[in-house]
Image 1: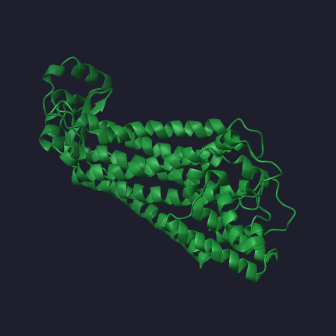
Image 2 (image 1 turned 90 degrees about the vertical axis):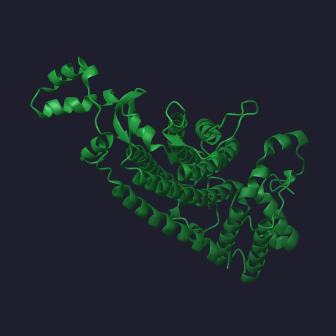
Image 3 (image 1 turned 135 degrees about the vertical axis):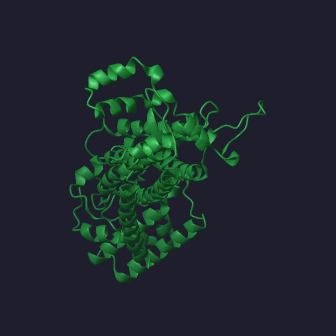
Length: 447
């Protein structure tokens, strides 16, 4: 039975179109809807809508749904429309009139928001933990190869001496910066929407602070109408943070694809990370990196979807927002998979040190010769002209010695990787603390 059922039935084609694949996507939200329902029922017990016996029966059945879900035995059918209806129908079937009390003072509109907020909290923490692993692996790779020179490029042309350490240290710092965006998205998401009902509150004197505490939210999202208006805004903020992670992975992938070509051969991918050609026996293809590169564009398109759907609607709930759920879920899956895959790739990556050193040809030291003239007192513009007019006289230097002589902060001879490692430790501690906090709140809820 549909929660909105009246004295008519929906046309089957209308039902199919309006439900879409929601009943399939909502399999990802079963446990979160159970958590929200237990917290809401606890609050209804406090304000005397439910008595102790009723609450205990409801909680027992909801915990039973969790067990069914763990075995993949809780089904959501198309005619249910969504997870909320499937769970309430289950409660009514098991408990009769008691089950009919669960929806008091709430709407499917605030239910889905609770589910997605909890889903997003857990998934942001999962992505964060995977990202921490990737950054740690990247920093270790930078440390291990910090004294290995290679050509640095500008405008896709050889520019100045660089190093493997500088390149991978750059990747690590960029990946670290994503925690600023993740943190902002997490903070926006970490607000309790439950109790906003359909966007205009309820005539029952509910306790929204209690449900916020029970569900592990930092605070109540205050304005009931803004709760509905934030649908799409907060999801877009989350997807934006994920898209920036993917952009970093795209940059790393693109570099490694290029630099592992035979013409460069600075890096080797292990054979087991490559695929072959159906016609060319000689091929070992970096498909894994090409797919990560492409998936960055997919997440960017999912961000565009979420933004486009939410920006044109009237204040209050609109069914348009149903279509934001899938881009959010896809973005999480793609990003988490890609981060984990990139950890495998970098852990298995091999450096061809000889080729990296040989890439530092004579002309790459032109700027260093310019610098030497400046140190002797020659004005910069005169020194520039002198070197530019005599590029054929630029001498090859010891590339390893060259990179180690550049000692200012962040240069090849002073990568300051410790700063990134220290920052990563702080982030790891904060993520672990938040993860334990959320896990503790949800564990207490179902005890």
